[in-house]
Image 1 (cartoon, rainbow, N blue to C red):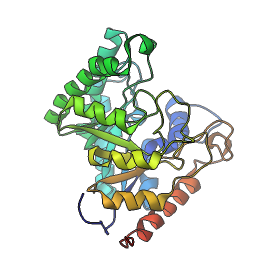
Image 2 (cartoon, rainbow, N blue to C red):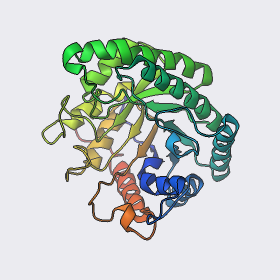
Image 3 (cartoon, rainbow, N blue to C red):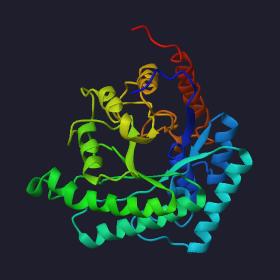
Length: 315
């Protein structure tokens, strides 16, 4: 841990913030305002974000449980178009991500997920995304029979090691995200990274998903301790409004977050991600346009906290 950092961080927009609107566009759904990936990038620049995280879900042809439904040429051309637009707008791409499951008990399905992620790492390289976000996976049905350690060591770790090697050949880092599933606590995800033992694998520090293993929420959990604990292994972020989960009401203490961040050696991107649950006031499906105001408002709050915490706190 070095000296207290008093500079700026590049605050980014994670495209999942527009997930409902982007999916309405991709799937041609009526009743929800559409936004396409290129429009979302332009919004990010206009709103004052310093970077964008282009989740692969929003590249036409992406499929969550199979290989792409469009041709390799079409997908990689779209990735190059994203890169060109970001260069034109002078807004860096902080990373990308996919859905996957590396604790699935079916060997063939798990192998398919590894194959899929390799493909999207190749697309990330075309796009110029430096980090590929992956999950471990939902808690499998044989957890009680085999236990967490055995499943992670025999399924997740080999997959991550294989992807780390592939990513290294493409200039793309692989980062495992804590997500309240098989990677719930800082101890779990740090142990997993240590078992993988590869310099091209790190952590996506998701501020909204630290909790006790197999717990439905984190209402009584010390999330700040875990957020800080994984900082030495962090390759990228997903900063959420709520640290105990989207279904809760408590908001992340942004000043505390940035104070801990400034005490660490992390100097990378800090993407933010907004979530909505069914029934939430102002849900994107109930609006006449995508949730630009909510996202811009959170950006203002995040940047204000970043500015407030520049002064070295009294010891």
